[in-house]
Image (cartoon, rainbow, N blue to C red; front, side):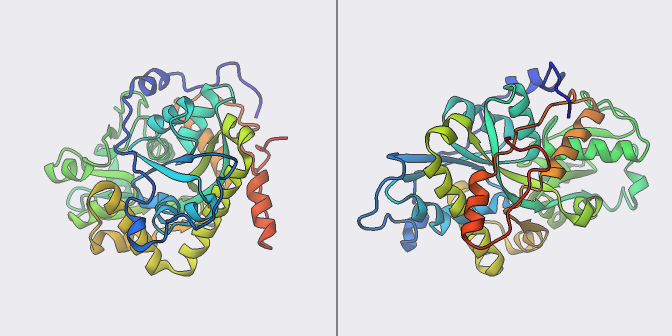
Length: 369
């Protein structure tokens, strides 16, 4: 993409900057995983890169299960040795980007839109995407009494998690493809977009204040448990039904100063995904156990089971789909055409994959030269 002088969303910048930090908790290493001994530091272990700790951010979403499982099963702690894992749990991408920029976290699991926004706002200086984590896990779920077909969405009130977030951009793009006009900033138009925190979307649905939602898991399955039905799985809109929903990002200064620690975290992420894909039922239980440790509440089986099935865990960052998602944001009027060249640095990930005899992954022309 050609460079552009202004590299941050024109109209979302102020809104994002004004958001309060929404970190729910900063869990000390091993708060739940230590119960079964999986995250205890091995005898004689040494610190990685001389660090006392590595601070890792993620959301309490199943689409961040690589991080959930990595913490719960001790994969991160195993690779970091005597360097403690310090998890921090977030509700929203902008707050995690803020924490990354301030140094409150070093590495994070996050969606594509916050990654793009964070990179462009800093003129390419704040973060790098260093790996993939998950694809899929996003659905349009609706009240079947009000919406029986895709065309019935017109004129209805549809929730998305946040102005300019990944699902918000996806819904606006899909609505435009239907020929409907919506003002992206206000959410008003042929469809009304209601920006609602995922935690309260089920209550909004039950009260009738929204008729449906374009949301990630497990929120989608929570709505289904309340009587909603899945009208569209976003994966069906993408080639091979794959699109990035979760990336791994790092502070550029941390990447430069502590490459061994970054390699340890990426090795643990690769090991986590390998274990998840080989042991899906155990992995689902482990992710739910960590969700309970982080939030105080596990997901019930009727929510957990269908949500888990819709997510694919992959080390491939699916870079071409991130570029497409940026184009969707530009089309919606939420982003000026950005220069994403250099947003990826997959050097260490490909080193880890090569060491395991696995194929390397591609940055779709957006990698560090």
